Image (spheres, rainbow, N blue to C red):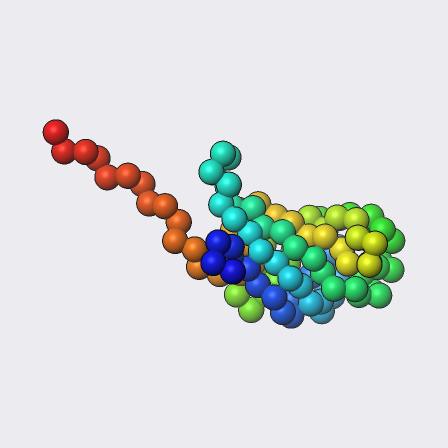
Length: 107
């Protein structure tokens, strides 16, 4: 994905102290309008997670081998995959070349 950063693979989702071993597909981008990095994705179908959330969203923590981040788990899509999103530092490495501050012009 040349214009996007992301992570696909195993992760641990922690909600209310309960850990779930899940598979995720995540990506993100820097939003120049607000200056924040927004990341988002899907959690593969997981019966234990579905039983706890019962179709509702909740705050949590997402851990991957590349990092840890606070997240918001939202309602599931029609296939039972819960949406997940966060703002700021994602739970994966960001490989894109972020713009650097412009150097002052010499007069």
